[in-house]
Image 1: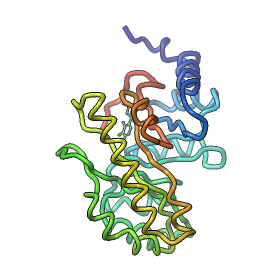
Image 2: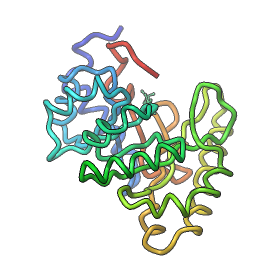
Image 3: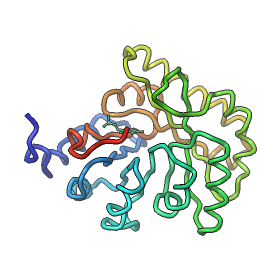
Image 4: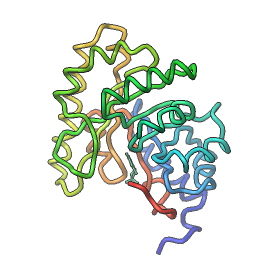
Length: 235
Ligand SMILES: *Cc1c(COP(=O)(O)O)cnc(C)c1O
């Protein structure tokens, strides 16, 4: 049985350490703190964790306000509605979940007005999955060079999620396809933009070792750090 004690500071710290021990150098461990109370984030921060991901703006804002922006990087990983772009651009350093050209253009325009320049990842859908958003790979090929010229964002790479129910082998293939796609897209970019297009956000609690083997540079781990989500989850 999971008790709140089991999810205390020692447990969170031990889980973080256990993942780090298996993680190759250069891969970022992002703590997905959606549906977790502020104390859980503070425990992780106390154990040295300095980047957190949230998927709902309203839930994230008080946590960001409480923990601050100076020493922590904040990543938005939820579905981004166009009317939430301004507050997301103001509050978050990274956005992983961009799935339309219109959203990219809006982010750049609003970031200019707000004096911001977010790091952004394009979410890609490599397999049919009605539950998940993301660009079809063809659309990425078609749009990339134009998006790389948007002045107020940095295009940093791709994000993907494996659909539920794949075998380990199918997951491995999907993550491999994402890495191959990222390499192909990089070739379309001018040198400066290409060198910046260097991140692959893939891998969650249940599948991160497969993602890392395929070349992930950012794994997004929620339950694997914090345990079961105690608040109502949104995704
Ligand atoms: C919730 C979520 C995660 C973390 O999932 P866990 O299985 O708890 O590790 C990662 N990425 C996205 C986009 C999520 O919504």
